[in-house]
Image 1 (cartoon, rainbow, N blue to C red):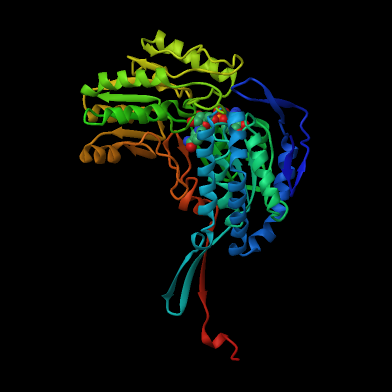
Image 2 (cartoon, protein in one colour):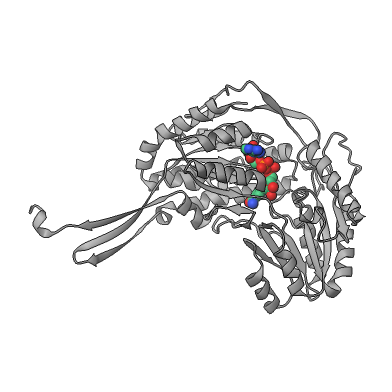
Length: 485
Ligand code: NAD
């Protein structure tokens, strides 16, 4: 597998490659190079060389490439979606959903001619005008996690290039094949050489990005511990950094909710993508009388969800990403049981025909003490723990007690409860009768507390803000200084 630098596929100078595995079948799909700092340097220099000419291309012309990219992505939609399923394990329907979200970002970035406008004010003093213009920044880096190999780079790079920047993308070394496909399409666009660059690798490549003097911005998505590392090391080098981190995503069920609908929606949120979504509900808090019927409904839904290879018809949930992830999730279930939980549905060692796959079936934990370690840990697998609260205030206090603040959802038929929840939940994304408050391209994908470090988010208006810098011009043109024609 090669990197894509300055308009061409180029071999990495890496001395080490690691296998890219199909997590459902255990088959090796390819090998990915762990590119060293020299490869990041080559890509950053290429992007920096391309920048002065690219920023001068009129924005109306820059977005034409994105219109073409949108058409190519539609044309190759199923091919890219299948690649996601093969390397990341999710079902084909989930992969298609992911690519739909990716394409929406291309569409929204096509609005750059309006979105990068500044503003002005005449006569801020007699005969003096003030203008704020937005300009691109330079070379922008994107560092992606494994769980959305298609969508997450799109939260950033279409906006970055539409605004006149050049980019360097480093996908997760566990799922590099999807970006190989996407860069095949980007190659067909015949963008000026060096506007988009791809470097495969792991930690060494990330640290080289953070330290590189030519890279001006870093957009990162991944676990909270890596996010903190990226945020602090990138900022220490004076870069503009936005980092999205881990999550727990509590969901509160009030007794006045439609419990049949709530349990169906929460099951999709908790077990969809095998619980490896940054918005996966992993922690349900039932209020008062909702406890028993909701727990019973969740048990039923967990038991009946079909786990298997995501390319096969009828499969509703795929594997987790690696054997290590599977071992970790199973270890956390063991630990939860030792900490006092009952595994009322136990997904350890499921009977799936692919014996080399990393399968964990849906799991429901009940009576896990709130003070336990597992209750505070991001499991990132198909595991839902169910807790109880006496009223909505107690439930909101639990929502606000954890370290993460990505998403919280409420299921209710009461408008005033919904408003109270929206008002008081200390999270970046709120779902009301919605289990995954999915990131839509025209809104920022928010996050709070240790789920996000930075101020401007990915997507929407925030993305145009992040990928431009403001310049303020104060002008005076007295008539006497101007030549008359
Ligand atoms: P990760 O932190 O292990 O890896 C993310 C990226 O950082 C990868 O490109 C990887 O190569 C690199 N990396 C890993 N360890 C590093 C280190 N020590 N130093 C420098 N670079 C390093 O995350 P992951 O396991 O790929 O993804 C899952 C995590 O991402 C979960 O915690 C999930 O909640 C989170 N996530 C968050 C969001 C969000 O929007 N908040 C979205 C998707 C995923």
